[in-house]
Length: 493
Image (tube, rainbow, N blue to C red; front, side, top):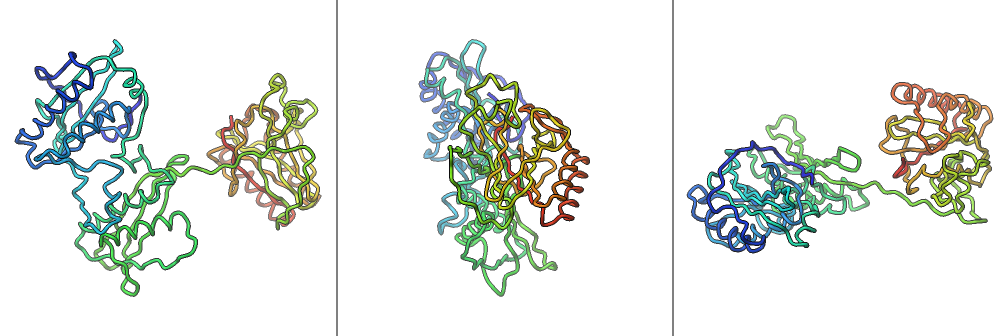
């Protein structure tokens, strides 16, 4: 399995002490009779460990990991828990985050709770003979060196349940908020406690002045970022790490999320002095969080459905993906945008683009393919002219797609045009004026046509930017006779 590394340590070769490696007992027996007594004795008796603190971690290639198999994680947790109540052994905090469950109460903020001097690492390797080798060592964090003589190992076969746990990978809560172990978007309260702990410790350590921010009196609806900032501020106030006031406020607290990759965001909370002449400096804390995009499932189009017209201000109503009840619409040669290669797949999912019109309009459909650029959707003839559909007021214009074009049919609204979208995007662009429709048609003809489920190289880069600039000029000239809508789709290939 592939393990993600938090930081890299130099590989140091040390000799295994006599009796440190065992094959005579099963894993559980070795753990309770050999490993636990050995680690306890070492942590209590070695002079270098006196008054020091320890964190127990899993390792791969001599580096701590943010995730690992359920088997090695269980060994780590049991070994740590067996040392917690032993006099003379100090265990650094390990869990969701030191701030969780701490800053919400009135207890003082303990900024040493998460500090450790040594790591006790558990590393598991699979052998060529189908067995596993488990090795336990201690690492001096400051020196970045393994403690000489501190080692214990076991090699042997696993039980059936242990083998199942070996194949199940889970996150290590010790590293929650790191890039490789981000929070989820439903854990706002836990992430707020995380950020408040980090920011609170920085506030308590600085000596240049007391930060005072104005309390947010807005009790109305706030966005996700503002709500999280308020949670962080409440946690800081609960442990008296940050003062809140009105007229005497000298700083502001702000939050911002930066997209890192797809649904992964890095969230920053910063306290910034408002007086530029002060020696006080901005303080910040960050954490990674996954914020999933929300998609809607395609609705099934029933036979002979009666729909009331929608009273939207724009002459284009909702644009989205629908699932057709009959697959022949997506492979019949007489149907627009059919795909001859799909005629053998009678049981495939049949989807279509659908847009409502509140006025008579000429509608064109475009597709920005992921990594392949912008194209115009055409029929099986791949005509050099733009394919236009006539929409009547109060009705829908529908363009069936070939089988295999969409995998799930899930979609979400998009805010605008993008020169490099993260997912496949579709556009419906329409005109209510004959002259505007002709201008659009001539401009859209400049795009390569896509005539089947297979992707087609389209406009990208500077060519696409110039095409969009000319489109903007056409829309401005014929405004308000031109309108457009866009959506993003999921699982397109």
